[in-house]
Amino acid sequence: MLVLLPPGYPDVAPDMFYCDPWLTLQSVGRYPTCADQAHAFQGRRWQRWSRHNTAWRPGIDGLHTMLKRIEHALAEAK
Image (cartoon, rainbow, N blue to C red; front, side, top):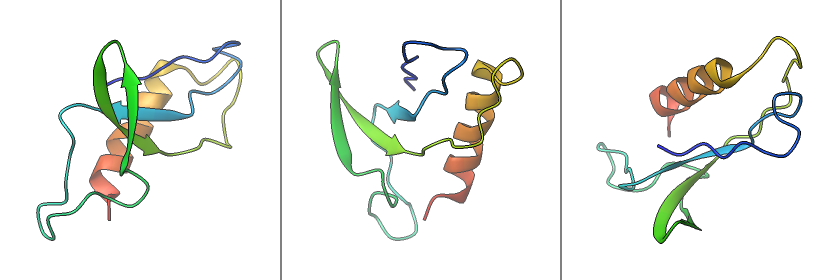
């Protein structure tokens, strides 16, 4: 799991998260929606999970919020 913190964090939300190894939906054998693009980082090809956060609350939200969003995205993947 990879989370890249943007310039301006913690006032600016992390935008996406990344997985390596790549994850597929067990029931259908394909990548989840909006999780089928590669992102190169430190010599590895990461699976980009595009999950934009428009509800970020500066001064309240932080990495703990992003981890909960990741947990939710993995549980609800289609």
